[in-house]
Image (cartoon, rainbow, N blue to C red):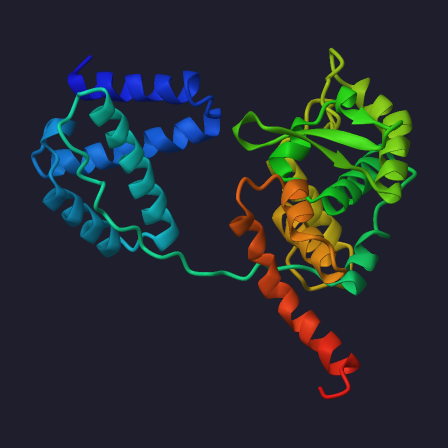
Length: 300
């Protein structure tokens, strides 16, 4: 194992053990570092300790020439800055060449969401007399009713649902856990699916799965599987809108804020670490607020 590999291995262990980072997070860090190491070799730079601020500037220029998005560049630079901060702290390098590298400003994209009238049709296409129809309806009600991420949805186990206090335990990013309330429609759909459809699907597997949502073979449903289900549901409607698990998450947050929900409460429900991540939804609600103002204020 050469020095670069040893440095990278130590950093990954630091993320896993000290920072308790998820597999997805550590994988993204590793990809960013290996990508930069490949660039270093192109420039005849062998070791991480030999990297200068000038090389970092060259790397930024190269990323721009390769047409990487601002978001991707920002993630790569942030990962490398953390990596070198670790190396500097452990006395493996004398300085952090990424400390002065400025991150490109992210473009402010407005989240896409679906209007309530459009959603109404979507909730009436599943065949509730079949196991898969019951499952699909439960997924739809849960995603829109809670705003959880598709990865969180697929990680839910049967034991995480508490019908008595009407909540579901969600295991979010960075292994953070939170309890999310279940609405009456989600409870009805989940109860039907668990009591009927899931039992039939579970019987198709060699051993019973703990996952709440199962595929047609009785195994755990994957995020890709959920996206496919939503695509098929939208094809059965007259709607022309794009729908995905993330669009339902955006819709959940937007509808709550439109009805006057407290932003801190929405932040907690979504599992956002920072309020700034939730504030983007206020841009979506501005048109709604303007409409209310024009319709109700005497001097509007």
